[in-house]
Image 1 (cartoon, rainbow, N blue to C red):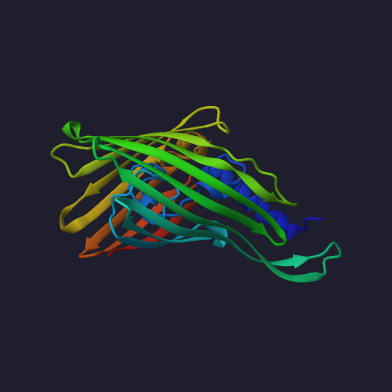
Image 2 (cartoon, rainbow, N blue to C red):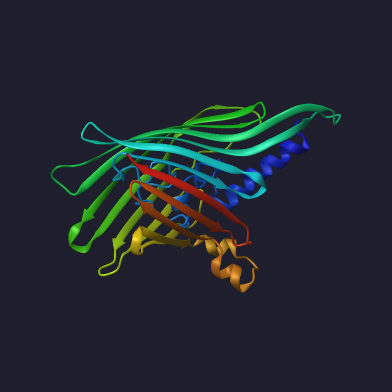
Length: 304
């Protein structure tokens, strides 16, 4: 029987799934890269070895290592570490991402202590992408093993993502198509029976002429949602290798129910700042929910 502490964790996970993505497993769509956090969910064509929101065909970072930590409400934290390396005339990426819901006191039905337990989600992911020699086209695929645990209950799944991106130099634009969360649950017990929710993402990035600004547009289609979600974000490069990021989406509509003006304006939006010095880059990002609550993240990258 689920006790009150376990019920609290389930509610926390369910709340994240409502705020971030309507899927059977809320961990599938959380932010894991602080540099992309500032894009507010946009940027599937923004290269990152640790992001959960990226077209697997995108990998132009070269030899690159990055690590990130994101702090949610109620002491929930996300930690990620990843690397991209050239391999076999293409690029390979590897990452480990983990979100901890905390440590809790367990009780039996008679309210006697049974010790502490933890709740968490973990992903181990590997991917490969390659640019074709005859066309300005890159293709890629990634696979990940997902594990979610709540005390003695576990859910495991294996997932596949595939994608492609096409670059048109004349208009300085990239167009992408990717499929995510293809796979199946191969072990499930007790506390949850979520369903996989595959999604299709159509993406565009555009470098603005005469401005150090790149815009990102992403439309996400999922069978768990009646209407597609639209994301827009931008990465503005200032002098001295300083970057300003921003982003928002149509999730603003559901996040801003009966909120005041400022929360309605800034709700479901991301802001970020970063800078590079030599081979090291540091990024800070924040995401603002329509309720006014925020999440914050810090990321460090090293060009190897």
